[in-house]
Image (cartoon, rainbow, N blue to C red; front, side, top):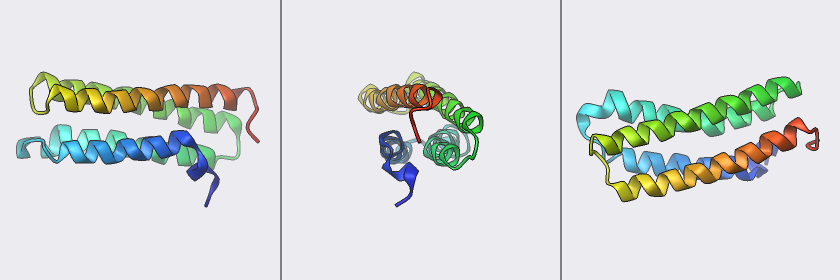
Length: 121
């Protein structure tokens, strides 16, 4: 198993991918190329960019990828809130996923700080 697969932030983000794919299956067909596709693209980019950031040779490059991950998390949160606003998913579903998303965000922020301080070898 490679390094990034051992990271809690990567594992939790993979769990987030599963949840978003599960809930977007409930979206109406007319949202297939809009909210469904955008939500899936945003969530998939989270673990993908964590993995890519871990594969970079320079700390500055890695940190840039982790900041992109944070942006994708905020994007996903906004897309979920839009889905709630236009009433295509129940509030309970959104709250459940956003709770997991905030957990991922908290772990990511700690990981970025840890990485910036050079504590990661």
